[in-house]
Image (cartoon, rainbow over all chains, first blue to last red; front, side, top):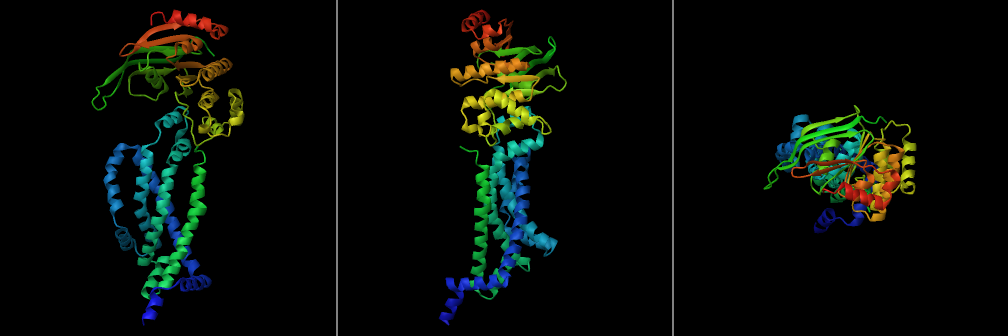
Length: 226
Length: 243
């Protein structure tokens, strides 16, 4: 009995890799990781876009900042679980509700980080852009966004980690597929090797995104630095 | 170029900086009325902190918090401003910095940028990022940017400070060359009296607190005399005898 428990609850690397292989071979692993990644991507991009826009607006306009600061703190401290449950209750157990819940959780973090950058925008360069008639779009692209690049990159990195963790909870509570759902099934069957196999698979994917996507982008936007 | 026509008319009845913390409101300019003729090179001079740059910012439209009036001879006067620091975008190359001030649909942009880079001697550094260049070279890029838009009015705020003498001299020579090639109305702020005499066709001196115009003289020197140090020093003594 003790031996059985030990092997079920504390599987060795061999058991976990065997599980990993069978799940990968059956296509189950690829399917669930893929579905989760799509949700992560959707929530991530929407949250980055809206969060950055809010952050820039708050960093530029003092009045708006004072007014919305309380709301920002409210949303920052709203437990992820509450947002998820409310979204499911109000909008049903749908894909839209799932992604919306994750997005709402992430937006305040992005907004707070980008707001710090927007507060420290160079007035010298803004004046230069005004004199030389850059206009809204050119100013945003060549003057404002490059100054915010470091802040947006920081928000993106922290964001990816946060988003994928929340996506798993969302899946566990109300989606029929995805890594979160598989972890839940593993939990019900006390199948720890399955839980570890899926967790490791997803960590590998996120590592890959960090190394192959985020870091090269960061190096590119920083190439002008001495 | 139509001489005799007014390019800029600025009147500042009152310009004050609002009180900050325990410092009371500071009245900077009062009763200033300056009309600049088209094609003239007007040098604004006066002691440090007297309000020269403030007046320049008002003309540039960057400072709108004053009581007075600003008018340009052209209906839609194109301005260039060369600041005390180069104010180049550090994340864009020298060439991009100059190109972005041109309109996006300017078909001759490539040729204009190449020509001005050649003229200021930066062709070899076109693809360099500004912070990798010396301050003198950054200033050259800023000068190129100011001229490439073919401005109706060129505003300059001590653009050659904190350079070593040879660099400042060569930039001044470059400015004179560019200005001769394409004359435009210049309003130039400096506290360097020799520089003022070298460049100005008209010298306007600010003074007093709050500052007003205390002197307004024409500088009648030929282009060759301006390069003659003796002549410039003599003119300086004459022009600043009451200063």
